[in-house]
Image (cartoon, rainbow, N blue to C red; front, side, top):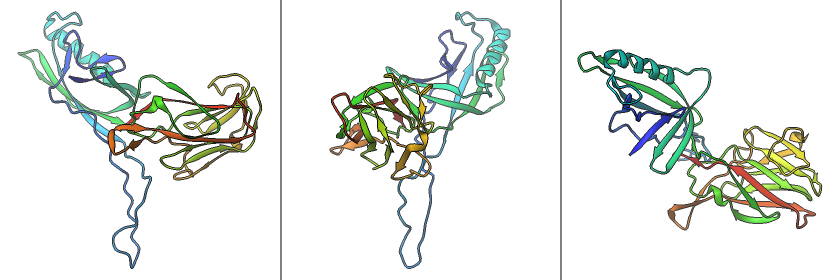
Length: 289
């Protein structure tokens, strides 16, 4: 059975303090931020590709009981204690709450905010209460719990980024590493044609790091993904392709051979003056709609 976890606290509490109402919905699929462009003398609208997704919201219906965390019945007083504890969990406002959607071995994670919580409906005689919280996912996409690193060839065409296989949403915050020697290296997302490139030379023994989520880049002299302490080369990075005016590389999964269960991210990497020491790495988490 699928369930949700907020900041590490199960909403199907193991001691029975509170439970998600049966039938609580699966995380919703995001809608598309629609744009319509009509041109006189042409039927319909112009097709606009690469539109972004809208933030999603969903409800969590909860029943709160009078049980202690150990599973004992604490009466109406314990019900109030549980309501206060749940209120504190749902009342975080100074940061995003870590929300996990768990279905067996499948775990998807997103940063969320609680937009509203209904007034608890309290049944005094039965010592239980019901309430609903409205959860918003500002960043739209759900992610894997852990980050993976993939190593590819430089140069290399249409390489499968194997740790990102199975994604359904674009990965917008990857960190790329290019190991020198490499002159004018670039990495292209095959599905969209978007490219991020560096106008310069990465010397043998140096590493170019491109943080696509934070729009920063640096050259470092150790095999790492930490830009701190490196030489800032952000001004030498160029992004081209769809949406490049507002974003760097978006790694996008594409369906293979008409099979919706087979989804892969492909990249092509180019550079001149490379050697056997040259290479490219991608550090990222899978993304899901």
